[in-house]
Length: 171
Image: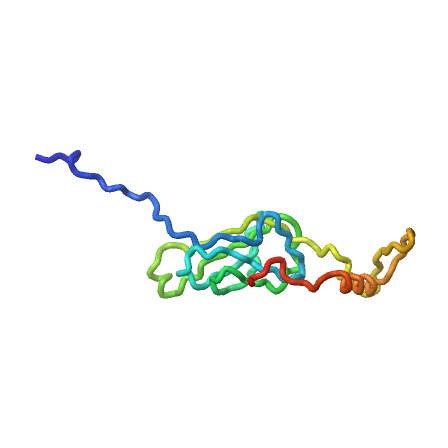
């Protein structure tokens, strides 16, 4: 005679854990994106079965998002051609969302996977080369301070700065 206590119990999983989509490498907590400049978003691909991803720029105090790209190959890198001028300050982060093909989406009841970057900041260029024509930039000459039109500062920047590359590179 057998009782219910003799029947082995099966473990019930309370939640099904799916493989993580990715891990964001850049931007990281110490990153500062410069408005108007290109940047690279870099991530480790943890599940290569996710072929395409959507990338969004978000802020911790807002539900609004800025679309970085609606669809990018899940290769681990995407170059964002220009950080928008309308953004500045702390509290930004990147959201990478798995794009699920429509046929699979109808068969699947689960939400697409996503991963978030660390919180980072968006700032201005530290160089005065973005001043508009006719604006004045202070320049020190022989211990005195004079003002020089912005073309001079642009020329100095060109001569003393290496050519610009994105803050992170995909290559």
